Length: 359
Ligand SMILES: Nc1nc2c(ncn2[C@@H]2O[C@H](COP(=O)(O)OP(=O)(O)O)[C@@H](O)[C@H]2O)c(=O)[nH]1
Ligand SMILES: [Mg+2]
Image 1 (cartoon, rainbow, N blue to C red):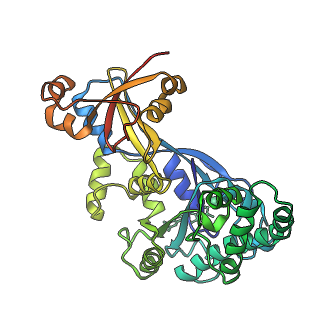
Image 2: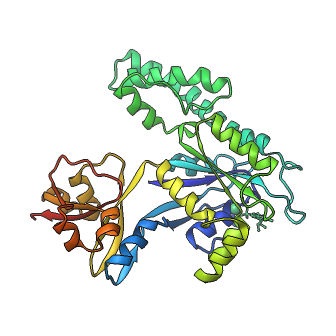
Image 3: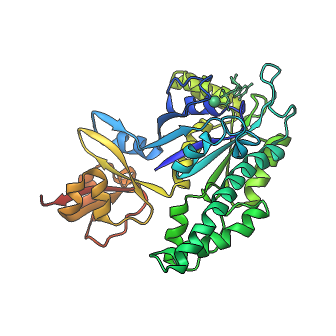
């Protein structure tokens, strides 16, 4: 699973990528996508670490791609042309960065700050790229459907549903699909405007909470489209990331923030992808593991090692909250709060696990 950072040039995509991943990305490297791994800051790991003595703490991570070259006219071959398309096609969700900061030193690509117009520009490129793909694919899909080829009917049906929506300049994100075949066909088409999106207002240092006019526009757009919204000041986040914890807390307090916006952003992106964490906690490490929401216990075991999934017997589970309340695994067991679950157990948020397996 990976998330792509998209947006117009000079909005702070690479600044944000650097702050998220710690990768010293080349800001001028507009032709190449930067790829990195972002740790997901997680207060539950800190809670576990307060009670379980351990050597190291390993957070969950998320693969992040800084996608360059999305400009007005990109779908028609402008800017880097369709190079950006392949990067966007490969990611599972989008972080759409919208410029809300003013800077004399950094000109805006369209001359003037206008968050609503910028969002539209980017969305339209995704929509136009999809429309081209759909129009190219339709004649072929019709031919395959006439020949009754496998899966051709669902594919044709999805293409026919998507075309009028895209033609109206709307994303296919909310497209109604009738059955699993159509859902599979939809996934196979990997349309850009179908990907879940999280809006990030890159705000100025004077508006860290995102209460200004431009950030408000982004927030309203996100709300109207049932999408997530996080205000972030990429510049500030980069500075915060370099401070000692004590100094950081002081600077945050001065800004009226309780934690770096970057933490919120990383968690929101993780959730956007439908990901959840479960934990293992022992003397060697305390670790967060990633699973899709709704995973069952054997699948969770498989996140640690594929053999664990095959040889899964059962899992002993307690919650991070119980560790906070009782203070040790022994106390949790004595209080009867540790459960034994089998292969049909659906993992819950905040589970801490010991898997038993046979390999
Ligand atoms: N003042 C200010 N400048 C920023 C902020 N975020 C990015 N910049 C600057 O804007 C320029 C473009 O940023 P960059 O991350 O390279 O944009 P990209 O083209 O979207 O990847 C750089 O000079 C950044 O230092 C911000 O929050 N405030
Ligand atoms: Mg960049």
